[in-house]
Image (cartoon, rainbow over all chains, first blue to last red; front, side, top):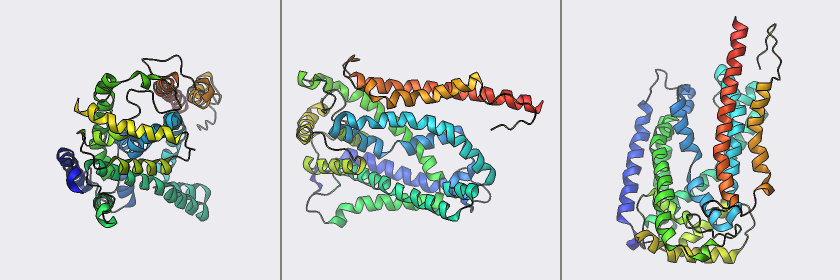
Length: 307
Length: 84
């Protein structure tokens, strides 16, 4: 099972994992306040984050495995329909701009920490506040599941995801460790941990974007065939960077293209299918195109990477 | 939002209409899918559908910045008028 491990990718991953873990625990001391036992301190960083920290935190929170694995996979699988993420993100910001300053100032004035505090304070209804809290938790569940599948996809690319016959516990062990560590430092540091780690994460995101825009298209443009230029938006082939992005991005996150040493393409494409089911309730446009898309990327990538 | 007792500037002003338009424009543009669901004109080989939406990322950012600046100016003017 371990023959597909990419040493450099795994090394880089472990380096960042350790660095982020240390930062996560140290974050408890960052911008420390005198009364650090309050919920304000744990959940909101003492309401003391300024423009820059908030900007980084938002960047780190909004652009996740969903952005880097699920959405590219959706576009890869379903074509233009997966592009819903772009207009949706565009429309979210005017909404945020309109409503959240008000939410913030009211919450700041009355000391609300969560949305359900706000609802309870505004409408005086315990039931409504509970409903909002439960809805928030339920709505976060699939999102967390998606992040876990994203971590697993990255682990698979590095060759530590296990194979078909691996015992489920061994298979999920790296994931369990990663999640336990994350939960532990979030528990001990509160919002300070994600805020501090967001600086690292945003830096890596910019690196990935630079790689995706500059490095990845170079060999692919050289390999581009006229068949890729058909321009049919509802298939997944407009060439350039779009189609193999879903498989390239996890490797790009690990910062070392994993050339041909991938454990098994079929297993990984199974992951993508899972991701697609979680993220998209779209009807599948064309299974045949999807299958041939995977085969294309499987055969094209080694060339593209080694180049 | 500002409940001025005697300073009474009108609630709807031209500046506020501009702010509202800046914030509404992305909704009109992005939800009107049939206006951009086409291949031509392409831009460096990218179909219209894709580059148009990417372009709107920049446009909506600019519009939100304008809305923010105008709103800041609006609020400053009203606060200044109220406290004076």
